[in-house]
Image 1 (cartoon, chains in turn orange, yellow):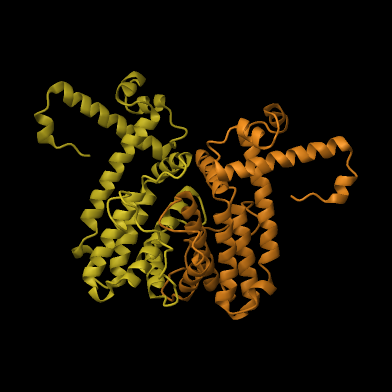
Image 2 (spheres, rainbow over the protein chains, first blue to last red):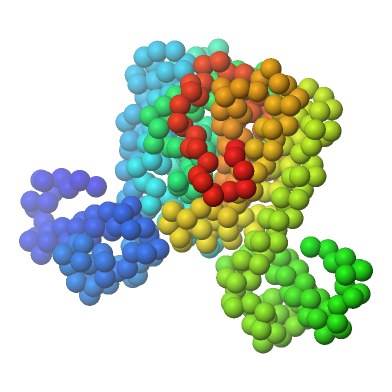
Length: 232
Length: 232
């Protein structure tokens, strides 16, 4: 979160220093998660990168997992703000259906492409907790549900359950493909290829246009109560 | 591997008992990986499940990770045999293109659906080793390359690079979707739904039939030298 200079100005000097220290630690940890990887990163590395001491780190964060919690909260909140800012009627409405869908696939590709270390860390920890929901899930739900809401306003003749089911399935495929590309990096799917948002947009369109897809069933789970910030 | 009764019969009694003990341990570990989960499973649990002692386990396996290595080797070898047995000219050739592709998506769905604990364990360990190839990758490559080889024999008019690129991309999406469904279980994609092989087959067909997909590029990485048992 970028500090508001005004609110910083009215903080007592000590609290201001403490906030800046926390910011420096989180920024250092962010860099190391992407550079070194979460598993290899030690509290000592973060302290060195943040020009801080290990003691100072432990004053603010229980342990490395506690630090990851703070990173997850911050990174997901920031991404949720981008979803609100970039998936809008104006942005998606400037062209045809392909343009609208490509706006969304581009945002998803960018998120996974720019945060591979973070995604790997979140999934690795999630795998240790059987049956727990991935912390990425509410963000994915928010993205797809917001995209569908706007798509339905732009093309109201398609705003029905059958199209919605194909739309959701198409974007689940996009999310899965991007996630898998990052988990298996370097893998067969090159998420860095600039053509990727186009390819995935065309895949979503192909899924939506395919009359034979039997998506009138429970293949996509209903959104669990309290499981996220909205329906996909 | 199922024991050949004849070859078992000619083994010295001590060696035979030792092989049976090893088999019982691996079977017990397999059950616990799926039931309890790899992270939670302890060597003590495996010993109890196998009616064995912890000491016996450590005589045969370095540690839990060594046991996982043995499980991975065995499970992937068994699955590779199934790929050779079930992805054949006879099986895929009995109908139209959709039938052929559905044979392959059904096998992939079944593998992920029946081995969720195993897949989670393999991916979790792989994530701790940055940039290492997933041990699942050679099997995925073998499956898709064998499927393509047979598809090309059945429909030689389509056996060109452009169709092959779409075929590979389509199956990467299938593999990603199934993997992600298992890693995020219970997730939005219900891999247990019996309609899933059809849906994914139709998705591959939609990708292959989509004329606009710009798959004339490097979006799918070339198969690395020595990276697997064949090209996808």
